[in-house]
Image (tube, rainbow, N blue to C red; front, side, top):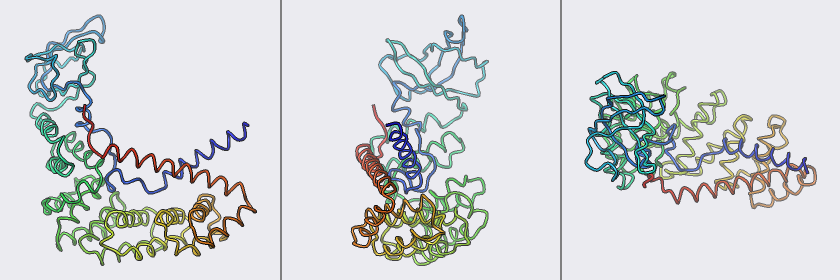
Length: 403
C-alpha cells in the first residue's frame, strides 16, 4: 500500500513537472511576464479605497492600536460608512513626520461597523495615481479592447507603480483581447518604446506584437534589427519580436523562425523562443503561415534530445499524425534515451489513432507495462487539468473581478 502511494506521489510530481514544460493554456498574454493581481483588481476587492494625506499620527500603548487621520483628497471607491466626511481616523499608527511630498492610497475593509485599513501605498503628492485608478474604474465594465486601450496610455507613465500596473493589465489579458485594438495604436510611439534603452526587456514581446498589427515596412525593419542584435536576441520577448515581424513580413518572418528551428548550433533559449512563436502562429494567426509549414518547422526539433519532448507534445496536441514514423523511431535511439523524451513518445503513441502507434503501444506494454501504465495515468491527469483550466477560463472570461 505504501509503495502504491509513493508511486502515485511520484506520478503527480512528474505530472507537475511535465505540465511546466507544456505550452500554457491561452488564458493570458502569450508574450508577457507576470500577470498577478493589479491595482484595479485590488480596488474591486476592497470595500473602500481612499486617497489623501496622512496626518496627526498618535501612538497608543503599542503601534497596533495607534491612530492616524487621513485627510481625503479623492474617494476612489466609496462605502456608505464614509458619508460626507472629509477626514477619517484610521486605527493605525503611521508616522509621516509632516512630510507633504507624499500622499497615500489606502485600501479598507469594513469590519463590525468600523473602517479597517489593511494596505497603504505611498505615492508622490503630484502623482497621477488617483486619476489613473478613477479612470480604470470608469472603464471596468467596458469590453476588453476598450479597457486595454485605456491602460495603453499609461504604459509609459513616469511613475513605475502606474506603468507596471498598466502592463499587468495586458499581462493577464488574452491576445484576442487586444488583437483588434492594436491595429489602431500609434505605431511610431510603440517603435520608440522598443528602441528606448530604458525599456525593460520583459516588455519587448508585448510591444513587438502590438507593432506587428499597427506597423508598416519601416517598423518591420525595427523588429528585424532587434532580432539581429546579439544583445537583444538573448533577452526575454524574442518570441513576441518574431511574431510581430511575421505579422508585418509573413514570408521573411517564417524564414527567420524556420532558420532558428533547424539550426542545432543555436542555444536552447533562442530555439525555444522560435518554438513559442510557432505556437502563437498556430493558435492565433493561422492566416500568416500554412500549418503544414509550421509542422515541418517544429519537426526540425525532433532530432535535438534537449527539445524533442517539447516538439513531440506540440505535435501530439495538434494531432499531427503524419510524423508518426519519425516520432516513434526516436524511442530506440541512444541519443534520446531520456525518461522525459521517452514518456513524450509513448504519450504521442497513446493518443495517435493510427495502427502503427497502436502496435507500438501493444508491443511496449509487453516489454515495459509499468512504463505504459504510468504514462496513461499521467495523460489522464494532464487531460483533467487542461479541462479544468479551460472551464475556469470560460467562466472567468479574462474580465476583472467586481464586487
